[in-house]
Image (cartoon, rainbow, N blue to C red; front, side, top):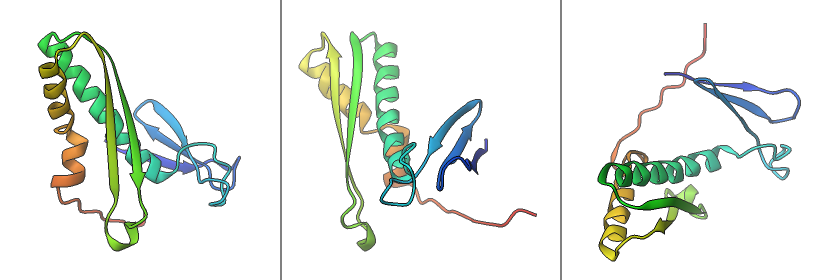
Length: 133
């Protein structure tokens, strides 16, 4: 699968991100030279974690027949030490439904094992950047 990113010249920094049949806009904040027409790259990275946790918990709950009506995830970032090699994300889950304390604890454990969480913390990512022909 390829993700395509192309400049949207309607803004000074705006990008159109194409993923399969989906499109979204990425941009820089006004302070960063953009128009804040969409999330920036860090926000998209952080959002991937929140979306993965929500989808994983919902998938697990459906599979196990747990009465989850909704899953809300708030991701907060502390990037103040990113230049020193530390990027902190805190994911806070709100589980809606008639769940026992044991159900809630199990769903918290499941959220901690979502694929993007594992990717961010347990996998070495290698990136090669090349020029097109």
